[in-house]
Image 1 (tube, rainbow, N blue to C red):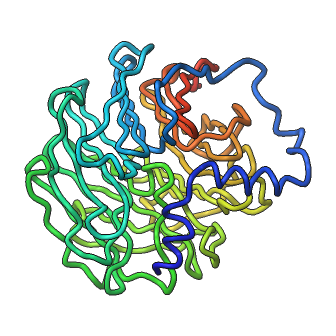
Image 2 (tube, rainbow, N blue to C red):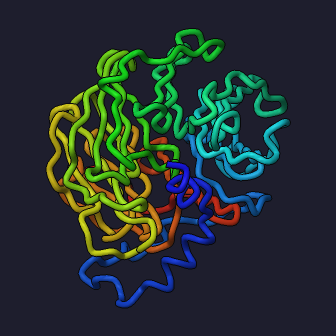
Length: 363
C-alpha cells in the first residue's frame, strides 16, 4: 500500500502533465466539439501552489486549497486573498469545505499525522487544528459535511478496512465507524485524493466514496451518516494503481455519477463515467465528454439535471443527469464547483484559478 501511495498520493500535477502530454498520440475526437466561446477566465491567485481543493459557497464566496498549507478565499467573486495555515506550511491541503465567508474546514493529506483537519471561524486569519489521523498507517483523502454540525472524513484502508470518522458537534470530536466488514477493501484498493471529491454527501444522511487501484473500481454508500456501508462495483476499469473511480457526486439520494479513468494517460480510450439511479446500489456505463481522465464530477446548484465533469482531459457538461455530454473546454484542471448554472470556478496547477464564463448550465 505504501508503494501505491508514493506512486499517486504525493504526485503533483506538474508530473501528471509531463506524463500526459508525452502520451498524446492523436488529436482529440473532432466530433467532441468545444463550445465556441471562452468558458473559463483565468484570474490572479497570488500563488504558484498546486490547487486541488475547492468549495463554492455562493455567487460571491468561494474557497480553494492546495500545497504548502495554501488557502485562498474570495468574498466578492472577483479577487482572491491568500492565507497560509500555521503549522501546515509543509502539508498539502487537498480538500476544503466552507459554510460561509468566515467558516471553513481544510483537510491535509499524508501518512499518519500528516492527515489533519483545520478549522477557521474568522475568514482564514487564524486556524485551529481539530483532528489528526490517530493511525500511523492511515491516510485521509476527503472531507464533507451535511450541515454545520454533522460531517465525515474518509481515508485509505487500515488493517484491511477504509477509515471513516464522523462528527456531530461541528468537528470538535470525531468518532470512527465500527463497520469494518462493510468497509473492507480489496487487495491494492485505495482512493484518489485528486480533487476533494472522492467523498460526497447528499440530503440528511447519505454519503458515498469512490475507489480504484484494485481489481474493481467501486463506490461505497451509507444511508445512515457513515455508520454502515455497502459497496457496489462500477463498470469503470481499474486493476492498476492509476486507474479507477476518482470522483462521485449525487444530486439527491437516488441519482448520481462517478467519473475517473487513468491519471497516467490523459486521453486513454477507456470508459470514464458511470451512472446510478438507485443511490449507488447499481451502476451503468455513462461515458463523459471530453473523453479521457476525469478527476471530478459535481452537480450544478439550481439545476437538478445538470452536472459538470473535469480533469486533465478538459471539462464537459450534461443537462440530463449524465445521459449525454458536451465538451466545454480542453484546458486541464483539478476540480470545479458551481454556485448556480452561471457561476462556477475551477482550480489547477501553478495556482490556476478560473471563473466560469460559459453558457448557462441548465435546460
